[in-house]
Image 1: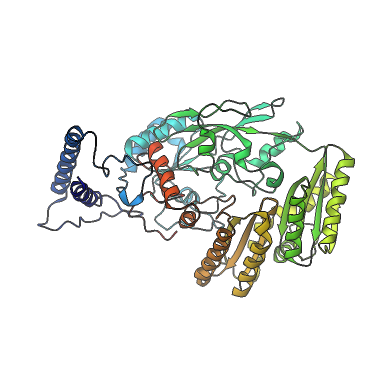
Image 2 (image 1 turned 180 degrees about the vertical axis):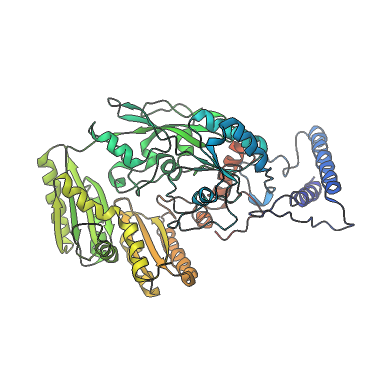
Length: 564
């Protein structure tokens, strides 16, 4: 049996390599030695072998009590990459003809600008290759249309990549296998608001800022608030959080249930609206953080919160990063009820001042920005005084706060323009073609101070311009590194060091940006091969043709030797 398995596996792999290889439109010649055959003859022989193998496996199954060769019918709990065959994708043009009939030509675009815009962004850390473009972009307007699209793509074995806000940073929507891009931008409606139950039902292209503005009139809020432009679908896909994470958590804590379309077009609603349920598997949690690799979310029920009746915004400058980080650690250990705790290093404060995006100028020192709120003015003032005392103990240089909505917006705006301020500074002072590498990690609070300082020291030693910002109330921080094209390898080494330090501190390689295409190898370092193989098994169970956002989070092709 072992000999049969080894020889059979070798032969099937040889046949499979006649299909398109990873990220290539060319056919790979068969490595099999012997007289040259035409392609049809070769494929016929391969097909006969596969048919014979299947029949042989069935025969063996009967004779030996179900002990079928594992390479053909895996019985293990995980899926190892080395045991898998390369995915065989079909002709996207055939699928596109059918999709045009299903959707109508007005919902299909093939213009160069559209294809480029759905493949890459300047601020993404990892960029698409010139030939990594979708064949077309389609624009569904309902769950039913998304289902129809996936039924066609599943039938034709054509890859699909979902797209909503396009703000992801780790190459999540790079069309590595070309295929079809599903732009969910027309699905941008707030469908139902249940004020008394504190939940709302939305479509995937609703922006969190639009949802925030909509909820203002009801004195309600949605907790997660990531970078400008992010939409609910992508936020679910990466399980992001934002500046409010210290108080309200990540998307994982704020999504009640989702409607998701699976690879073959099956529509599943993972949960009704109760805030708690012990009924069956946590299917909602399965899709949060899956980055579109298991299904496409078309509706989401989100948990809402009553806005604090009173809230102060504080901006506190410190002489060193260590002082600021130690302040955060003490606040967390003393259970100070902060709604948000953000850290910006001295470089970041310089970039904010340089950009002119805010009317106020700030001390160019490591700075904490905090939101403190409560049900009464007295309780809010009490918390504010406690925080001020902690800041004094850790050598704060300046302390300012605002109570009016206008002042709060102005002070907090410095945090929201952080990325754009850094990019603007780089373009004006370093090079018009400056590159930006934005990455994040998260560590236990007790390791935050050391991790932050060592990362900043390493970047400074390398001579690169960079800022460090973070949602440090839960140990999550970001490095935004500016570099020229010839400094790519140096920058990559610095990012590797930052990730290594996070893992040594028992942290994670990404707190909220997700894995995407850029952190696949780092995820192996964090989770281990067996955990990745388990994820791959789940992927293969839900998406056996491997059409949903292929090559993200982990490899699905033994021929994939990409550098990420």
